Length: 204
Image (tube, rainbow, N blue to C red; front, side, top):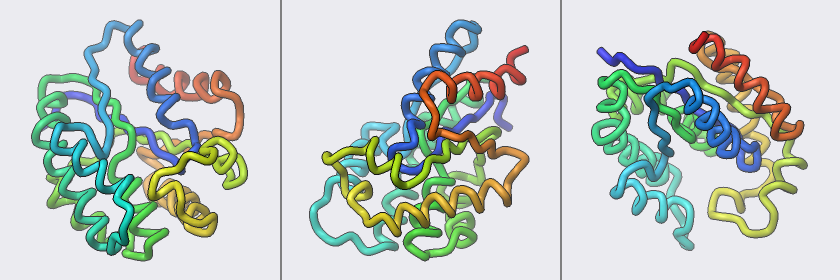
């Protein structure tokens, strides 16, 4: 049984989740808590190669092929990095995890979130986050933040990204015990203060 705490940072492209993870890491560092930062996909050397395919392959990728690449990355990530850290009692901060797969592939690609959750139980040994931040941002703000330089998924149409956002909000309704939705249309520091309030419950 894991001893550490598993916290994930989620949101559509342009939500600011990666920035908020970095700020949270600085906050936790001041608390003298042992932690690691990682990302999904790409948290291991093998995962970096899978990430390169997922984000930058310039041909067609079948929806189920895309899904299984994410799950393959996660299986390696769990075994090599996440579970060992948790078993050592460390806090794990992860940029994306299973909720991304459910939102992007389950809702937006139409593969079904419940089916993905079942497959994730195999790939990730049923490991779910203790706490998940979903940084919610409207599509217009998201588009402005991403800019013109886009990877394969960022280049999807607005309708795809709207479905991703709706997927995240639906998941938050289904898993309120672990998912905290934060309005990320606001400034970086304002959003960070909301994150700190939630994390503070664990460290005070």
